[in-house]
Image (cartoon, rainbow, N blue to C red; front, side, top):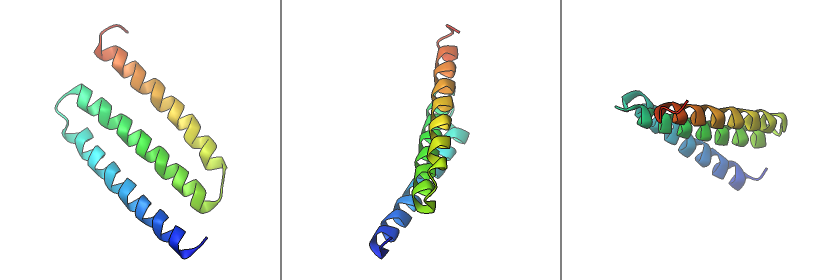
Length: 89
């Protein structure tokens, strides 16, 4: 990879990590269950982005498969929690 691409990927990783840190703070501080659920969803989406970034940097496609499965499980978990919040589970 060229030096410019490495710098861009490094900056993107730092920005994604900072976004995950802020979402984690919202997850801990969030006063309601809805706030925590949204923060959990943001955390999973951000970690999916980091997995994809790591997969690209490490040149290992297996991590993309893992992130797809993780994304599906995360989606199901958020839907279940949403149903629980609506009391229709």
